[in-house]
Length: 126
Image (cartoon, rainbow, N blue to C red):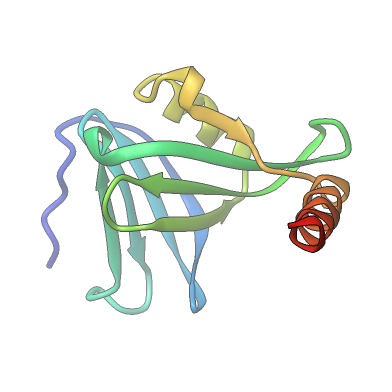
């Protein structure tokens, strides 16, 4: 059994972690960090302390009416992507522990295409 890093839990909600294949489980947000526990396999878990979180990136669609997924970028271990039933509630709870300046919106499809076109033309000019 895995020991939780939190002493007080603010939110527990069903979620999906995108780690290669989709892992279904539960997210726990508490005073010490962000935790994901797989419901099927107890060995598959993610524990991210708040001091390790660098950015929280949210994919926002339809002008903020729908958030399909969000990612937590850590300082040392990369980026972890999650989806949950009530993503706005999850992000509001995370905002209590992470600096709101470090919570950013992911690039839209048009922004990605613009950046790729600029990089192609910049390479040709050099």
